[in-house]
Image (cartoon, rainbow, N blue to C red; front, side, top):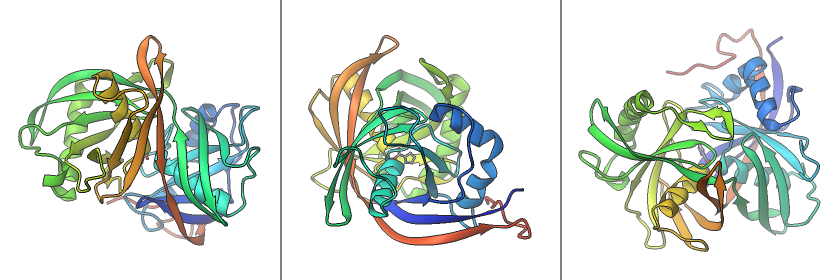
Length: 332
Ligand code: PYC
């Protein structure tokens, strides 16, 4: 039966929503979060659609479920949900989930100030700071991130010929620097970026297939990262990340920042220990760092650190009942 009641804590990470679902979890098959993610997509995607799409969600909505740890050393696991599906990794989602879960007392860290979390893309180390019962900052030590392809050329309907690098930071990102009609994120409206993005992503997908070299189930160019000049003098760079079909990330995007730092590092523009303050389309900031260097199937990779904050602003109980013709949501 595709119906249920879901208790949710609503939060945002630097402006982008995080709906932590704290009840109504389906029991998932598999021993890793990668396997559980595939099982969720196959059997329970209606829950994601009901909680993320209108009328209960919106184009930018994203969320998560907590699961018991899959590895012996982990504190817990996270399954990410959002409008486009179940991401292997989500940085703003992790920061919001950790903040909401700690503040609600849903997780008990083995070591104060530190967490180890299993996610579909691998394992994360996390550090957090608290003042009283509030979490004030969360730093993710993200999975190895790397430049996947350089100078990919393709023709997009409105923008014409474009060149972009593709990097992996937990999802695959096409990174678009100012060129031709695109003058930088600071020069364009969200409406313009949302009009171009699906065309650019479709055109790029026709010329390149992105497959993670160590896990062939992690595949596909899902996100675009448009770059530009920041508003704040304290930021190193600005970005607008496009995901799903109609979303521009309001946060600086954790996996996008990881991908961008991997690209800059591969080009010799960012080094081990450097700080990279990334600014979102609304001006909020994450602090990125290169914590280490490694390799992924022979490709030079970085170990990114991403620090940001989240605020919890509410709680709600959502019912999904098939008497409602829009029980499983809709997209326009
Ligand atoms: O923060 O990694 C992230 C993210 C992915 C999509 C939206 N935000």
